[in-house]
Amino acid sequence: MNDSFYSHARLYDLMFPGGGPAVDFYRAEADRRGGRVLELGCGTGHKLVPIASDGHSCVGLDFSAQMLAEARRKADERGVAVEWVQGDMRAFELGRTFDLVFITANSLLHLHESQDLLSCFRSVRSHLAPGARFIFDVFNPSVRLLAGADGVRRTRESFVDPDRGTVSVDVAETYDAPAQVTRGTWYFSTGSEPDFVVAPLDMRSIFPQELPLLVALGGLRLVERFGDWAGGPFAADAPLQLCICEAA
Image 1 (cartoon, rainbow, N blue to C red):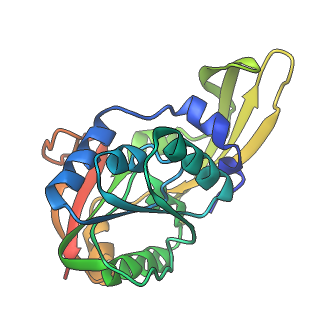
Image 2 (tube, rainbow, N blue to C red):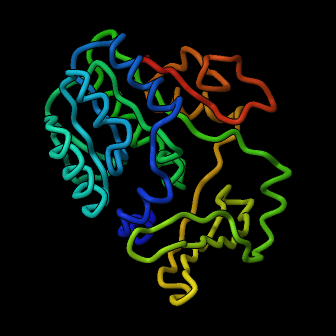
C-alpha cells in the first residue's frame, strides 16, 4: 500500500479531477442494483459522492485518512450522506451486506501479493447480499509498456494549482517482472519548488489469464469482462479489464 502518495489528497484531486465515463458507468450500475453500495479504495469520493447524490445508501472504505477527509469535505459540500470508513481492503468486516461492491481506478493493484488479492476477494464475498455484484476495473497489461519502464525520469503531465501555479509531474518507473509490479517514483515540481513532493507508487499487473483464477480462488465467479466503459468486448488491445463478478 502506497499511503505516502495519497497523503496529498488535494494535489491528487487537482491531477485527477474525476468525472467521465467511469463515473457514468458506476452510477448506472448503482441504479441498476439498488440497495446498499460499498466502494473499496474510495479515495476522495470521485465515484461515491455522485452515487450518493442519486439517493443510494453508500459506504466508502479507504486506507488513507487524508483521502477520506477530502471525501468527507466534498460530500458535506454537496449535502449528501456517505459513511466513510478508514480500513484495509485486504481484510474488513462491516457487519452488513451490500447489493453492489466496487473497486475502481486500478485501486485493486495496490495489492501486490496474490494472498492479499485473495483475502480482499474473500472479504468482498462475505459482504455480498443475495444477487449482488462485485465490479472492479484494472488496466490490461501491455508487455511493450512494461518493457519500457527503464527507470528514466520523464515528464508525464502538468496541472494548475491555484496556490502554486503550474505543477509538473515527472515519473520514473521500473518493472519487477517476477513480482509483476511496476515500481515508480512520482515527482511534483513548480518553477520555484522543485520536487516539493516525491512519493513512491508501486502497482501490480494482473494478466488476463490469471485474473479469472484469482477471482475463483477468492470465492467469486467472473460473469463478464468488458474492454471499455461502453461495454465493448475484452480483447488483446483493450485498455482495461472491467470485471463483473458474483458470489460463487
